[in-house]
Image (cartoon, rainbow, N blue to C red; front, top):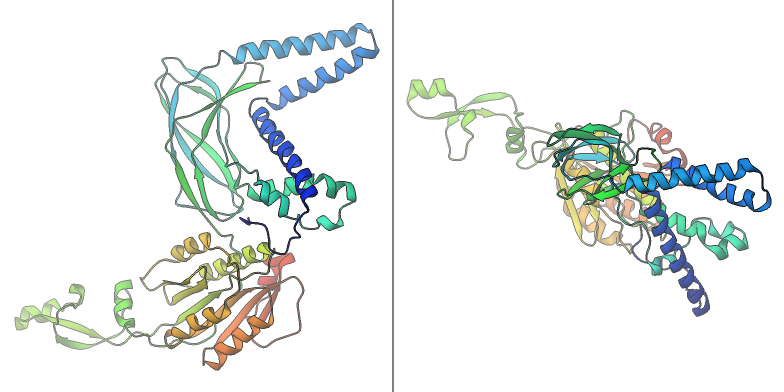
Length: 463
């Protein structure tokens, strides 16, 4: 979600700003009121209020008794429910038990440990997580443009209602966050309540407003009270796609310090002989039988370990207003991170996000989840800097067997980056996300974003 208006968006006039400012005030207050009421009026209550409105209109033009009877019955039920809901009380405290990670677009369930602090049973309750405020700022509303807004009719463009809905939807972090109805929590008892949630995008979700919903006996209205609970955070990893069997560019190359890394990971080369112990040798390599026989420490000597080290280059320079393509590029990079066997190789994730970033995983250095956590928080750069990216890769060229680039779009600057890396002797290929495939280019695999999952399955074995 852009934090500031796109530079290419046309600047509105002062008259347009004045009018949009009043629109923003109306939409902002209306959204807040709608959210307040929907948390306190249940679906059956909404239906009953509709009946009251319809009956009121019908009664204005007809004196038929059934109309007045319907109106009286609906008003009576509403009054009874409103009075009953005032007597719903709860005194509870809670603690969330969150998983280590979640994945964007995939539902998950966590548990809330709920403690009833009253001496009475608590009946028919629900728990609900309050999401962060999705309303955009006035500046963002004034300067943003909904995709395809220019194709809407004049009235819709003037009203800007679809733009407001689009901005609110883009800022929603998750769906759900609500438990099933709990029939009973005994007095002074503790109960674990499952809550289901579906993250909408990668990043960090902070939960700090847990509510308990107390419906009235008729199920028309409900009280909504905040529950004392420590704040919790959840890291949402990027969405991943299945990939076919593939081979990354380059071949295995001995890495300086590779033997030590392999020992740390628990994998070693073949046994070649014995030598005297030297300070710093791992204790588990000591040959105890020879030490007992000769009286001096001796360690096993192993052959050098060879393993590949690949660079995964993420393009963080999407075109202005094309953040969707960048998000899909992050998902594709995450898919390759998961698909590559980190136990048999090293992966260097490289990108530019305000400054140069290189994160390494595999061979006992870090798990693949480390790279996924980095990708969960990566943000696009406001301006292109392929020169710095090329220099970053070239500084690590001696250690890399090859590089795979994930591009969010295609441009002459990206083509020059690949040429520069190839001239530096780095074996490089690229997966390029685009909406329309250009002509064939060697070692470049264009993937259309309309059907990304199927397109990725068509990638060749040799990238």
